[in-house]
Image (cartoon, rainbow, N blue to C red; front, side, top):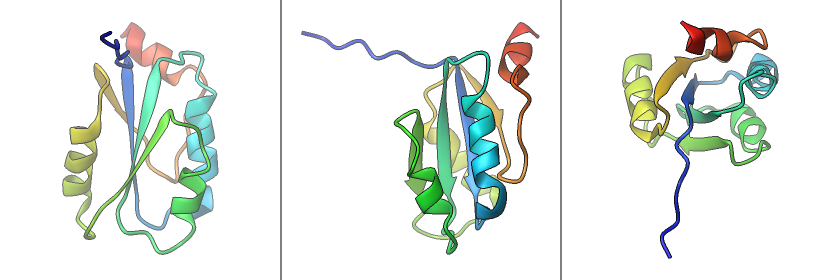
Amino acid sequence: MVKTVHEPLFSVIINCFNGAKYLKEAINSVYRQDLDDWEIIFWDNRSTDSSAKIAQSYDKKLKYYKSSVHTNLGEARSNAIEKANGKWLAFLDTDDFWFPNKLSSQYDC
């Protein structure tokens, strides 16, 4: 039997280096979206704070990856994009949050 894998509409890329202070608020804003066809690709760029613990406390819609070396943001984003399965990409910084209609509005455009 062949298993069909659903590819999400959006891959939300969160690159993180020591972003624990606002990280829950950022991640929760994705989980509150009115469009729920997404995955989070969480790229931990060698954080030394509690970012990993926070990210790993979520369900399997958040896919956690840890970089083997600390890199600049451009390279970290490229590495995260390689893990993405979605048709569209959306980027969220660890100190930002989205309004609940962000992804549905983006999709409508």
